[in-house]
Image 1 (tube, rainbow, N blue to C red):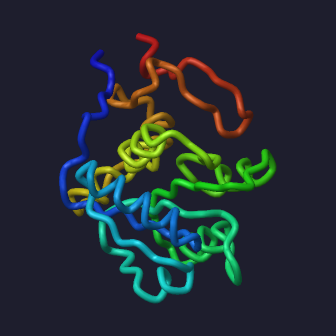
Image 2: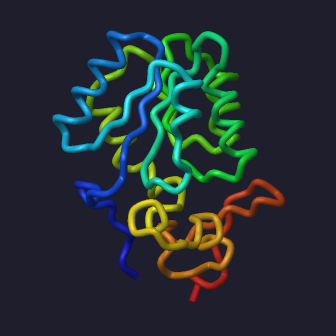
Amino acid sequence: MTPAVIPAVIPTGGTVFLVDDDPGVLKALTRLLRVSGHEVRAFASPQAFLSEHDPAAPGCLVLDVAMPLRSGLEVQQDLAASGVERAVVFISGQGDVPTSVRAMKAGAVDFLTKPFDDSQLLAAVQAAPYLRGNFASSIFGRKSRSFSTRVEEGTRDSPTCGLGINSRSNTTQLTPALAR
């Protein structure tokens, strides 16, 4: 069995949507992501992002947690409520365990606490479509079976090395289809 490999560079076509109310952070992260080869759309507020957001546009969302008027968690909820499957990487200067758990349970693919190393953000952005399970649909415009679906089906292309998660009992177990 060949393990799934995340390529070093995401194919072009995906945009990093960046939302942070701090102008200095927004400018620095925009520059970092662009220098690293990513197309970036930067927004100074959740309202600006939501008013211009195209759910069909491929890419991931880097989202600050604490912002005036609308928190990053509320933006994540808005996207989910409207059926948008967007990989979300949270960044926060005030991150705590309950907030990060809430974000991850709602589908975030990563949660970084400021200050973070540039390489942490770049790695999270590169991995985001894979971790969200929508790489094929976000980059190539076609549906892909989610990671959890591949695990439940026990397919050999799931990057689980034979381990699956039983969501009913929250236990890790050997996936029967891979036990052969």
